[in-house]
Length: 289
Image (cartoon, rainbow, N blue to C red; front, side):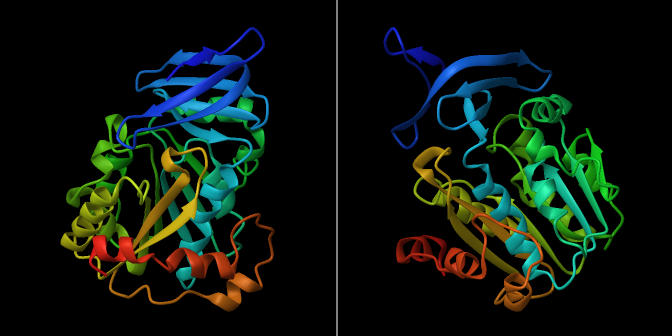
């Protein structure tokens, strides 16, 4: 999990992922920053081909080159599935890339980002300023508090969409992957409101995805869907997010609205949205669909 010299001229950052028996590495020019916050260790690297790289507790989090895949797929599918999301809450998302994508939607009147570690955002502002381009939007509110406690204290039926843009289910994020948290989200969502949460790799974490979906249903979400998309930076290079809807199904999305969107995307489109919903047979079988 450390930057390792491989010769006189090259240094690589490598993340070894024991569960999948795999490793992902990026060639780096230098480590630009390292600090231990009250919550985690954050490092910033300058890479030769992937721009800046943020690493948290030894795990790759965001790079300049491929972050658009994750941020677009965590934002646009859920917002084009909801009829008209006016109030959006992002739990986590400290690099602010998801916030930027959410605020591309004109119907969003308020987007609240709840990140427990303020240093993630401050370092993103310094090293990934393009991700923080909407931080000063009057519709944006940045809170640096515990997202689990925040959701438990929300007024019933006060939120349209909740996006859980968290790290892996260990450490500060562990409490975001259980029935109690999902029940808080359900209570806070308006009728037909939607929760979406990053749900790890379908090649390695099908047991986690299945457990998440079971817990969402136990919290009385009516419909659950998992979407798949590429993410080279993360273990196996293939990632997912899981949507859960209150009192409504997730059988379709606003295809016309997505096709006529008034903003640019690099990965998201009507076609990639449809493709993300098309689970391969081994995933359908594992998830009981």
